[in-house]
Length: 489
Image (cartoon, rainbow, N blue to C red; front, side, top):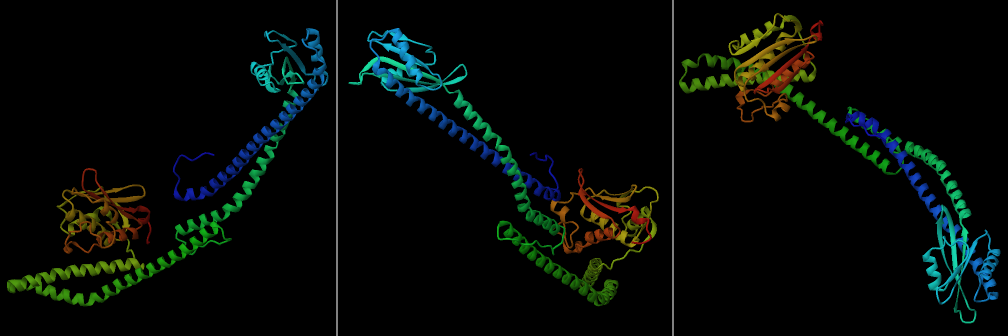
């Protein structure tokens, strides 16, 4: 089973996970079956081989003991070569499998007479027969053939005293080896159907076990895509059923929380819209009175004049804040509309800078006329916000660059200041966010960039914020040209 080297996306990994788990489950079942079969085969072979050899060994030893006991009482000592040969022949006649019988006579002087081939009699067995004065055996391999070698000393019947005569019998274990090999082959051949059966059982088990896993994975993807009504069917009382129940409970809580948050958001938006609307009428009167006081301030005492100018300035800021709030409420309610007109985008930029007295404070790089269809008022709001922020919070020179491609028009506003902090880059378009927490309230409402972004989105575009490698911040307005080719949005 291979693993994918590249890191997949979250969705694709969820889709592949049940299949991968199914493969691992099948492989696990097969490996368990193979391991069990191999272990059973090894144990069966060992036990069968041990049983077969022990049975053959015990049977041959018993027959050898009986035959030696039956023949040696009539044997005369000291023996001659002819009598030893006769003893070997008589012992062999009573044993199955045509064994080789070797007789050896040891006198006190250490001399001996040996018959037949003694190469299969090991020194270890010979020493065991001589020192233990009892029957001993050993399994040996000679020229690729297994043999059982049994030896026993012959003792006098009256006092069990050693006579110096030793008798050895050698018989082949080839039949027993063939029997155990046949048994091993039969057991080994039985592994194949066992493995196939294990694979079939694994597939069936995987299908049964992984079906709720697949259902849960599918439901999780739909929940992640925003379908908060999705639920899974709970079957049984096992761990998967508990997991499905936990998922449903989590989805219920999430749906409830999201619904509550959306309701609170809607109430907050309605509150802001209502307050902004209610403030417009008294604020209009306050603005008119503040304007009159500001015009007559030079005829008033110094303290009164300073208070009049302060009232006028604060009233102007309050009016701007109310207008911004009203504008955001129109975006939230979907009431904002575009008034598209054919325009030269380069000329629109020049007009924005000229009306606010920024023409000499900004370096502009504009190509020839760029004909587009946009809402000039809303584009002016976007450009004024971006350039105004660069002039107030950045450092000169401030540069505005207009460029076009096959499918979009871009405006980059760059400054040479310290740039934006990492946190500010993340929240710069949030409502009421101010990059400098120490900034005084006279620096604006914190809605400028949010309104600029909403105006760009209304055109089908966006605004991006970043820091320049050489220092300073850069804001990029992108508007699709395909939008400009339509009569309306």
